[in-house]
Amino acid sequence: MIRFENIFFGYEKNVPVFQELNLDLDAGLTLLLGPNGSGKTTLLKMAAGVEKPDRGTVRVDGKDLWKNEVAARREIAYLPEHPDLTPYASIREIVRFVCRLRGEPVPRGEEALATLDMDRVAGRSVRELSQGQRRRAVLAAAMIGRPKHLLLDEPLEAMDRRMRDDIMIWIESRIKDGAAAVIVSHDLDPFSVLATSAVGLKEGRPEPHPELPAEAAERHKILERLARGL
Image 1 (cartoon, one colour):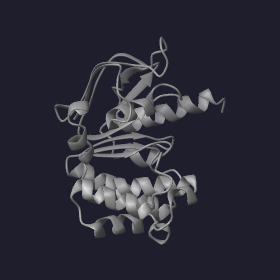
Image 2 (cartoon, rainbow, N blue to C red):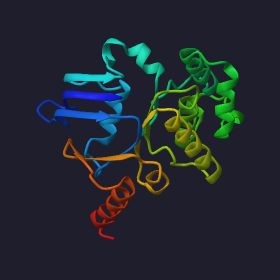
Image 3 (cartoon, one colour):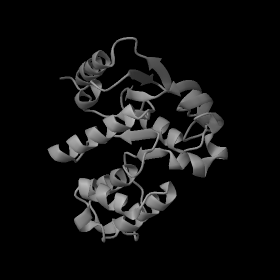
Image 4 (tube, rainbow, N blue to C red):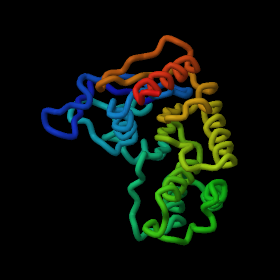
């Protein structure tokens, strides 16, 4: 479980994103819903230890994330919206680092790269890759080992059909093994069947959805279409 306790956070002074946020993200698949700017990406960043709250505590499996950062990161697979990678490192170097961090053999990393068709460009530096390739590289690294917490921002974006199928198989297998997955996606259809809960964010405040996850996903799609004037 990832728990947010009395979280205050803002990128700018006196412009809070979250005020007194209290939220539990349990095992299973949680759809994180809400319009752009509602705090979905920021919530994932805090859960992954990328952003530190101004006040409050983020706990991963009962332990303070910022007091147990190294141990917690071993259990977290994080795909950000815009990957920020060391530009001169090769993809293979990054994946091998993740293998060492999680105590996995190097061939596991090579398998993950092959799954997302990144093995043929694994020797290239990050600066030589397109944005889509960078996302696939980060997701390949996330797929290494058996992380307990999946924090995925648009995991199917820029993926072909086979890759999407492989990613969904991986997510489902981790959930069946007791992991917690938190998904942000504009395309909710692939996830709605697997989802066990849905949480909406509105102006930085959580709004648990009482309906079934599939119904929440459909409601979210309708609201997005209305917001775009479709």
